[in-house]
Length: 269
Image 1 (spheres, rainbow, N blue to C red):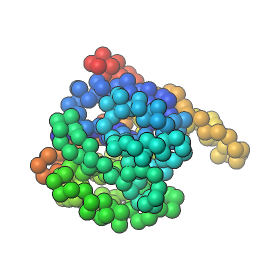
Image 2 (cartoon, rainbow, N blue to C red):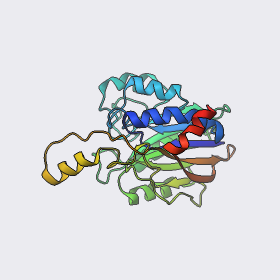
Image 3 (cartoon, rainbow, N blue to C red):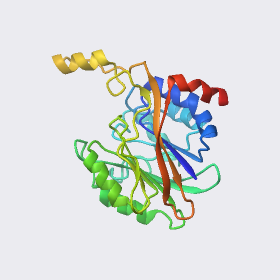
Image 4 (tube, rainbow, N blue to C red):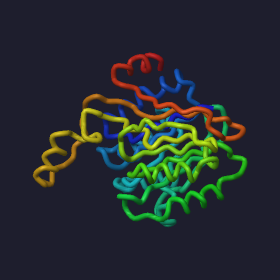
């Protein structure tokens, strides 16, 4: 089976672009399951119920989140009620949201999805390695396909998690830094790994925000808002092929749709 993971959707430009091209991408790339990190979807920080519904309607099967998960408080009802969206599993037990979910692929296969958050240069959270062990012990044995979004800053943190989960998940793919890395690989135990799948949104920017505002605030220390940029929109992610019987990855490749490529996917839809 084939899983598409789309990285950090940023702001209105990112949401609009992903929802426009995703149906065509699913068809042309024979995608069985689409997982999308959406923690930056509303104005660059957080997710709202209306954007959640828009993404799901466009063909997203499951949504993962990270450190900006609760920036929009009205998403809490969605986190508690819906079975296709997860919080980082190493958040406190009483934090709103589910630690893992099982969603069905287009072909009816069960896929477990969970998210973890790193601790290096991030907000204080519980140990992601301990949380991973707990989650994997809770997922039913007959669910062979298991997907982890590791939302972390440090590449060393991400590499460690990939090795820690090797052979126990189908894929461990990173988000948060908004810059796609060129280290996609299949680890020895059969886990697809990439430090970061990149950002879906405006790339003529500083990680999705307007260059001039970020530059001025950095140089002058003025408390300026970091507004979402608008140019060079791309959808970045990774496509992972998985053996459904063993749950082991058979292939991984970086995937990017640029604005100049978008028309053929929208025409397809």
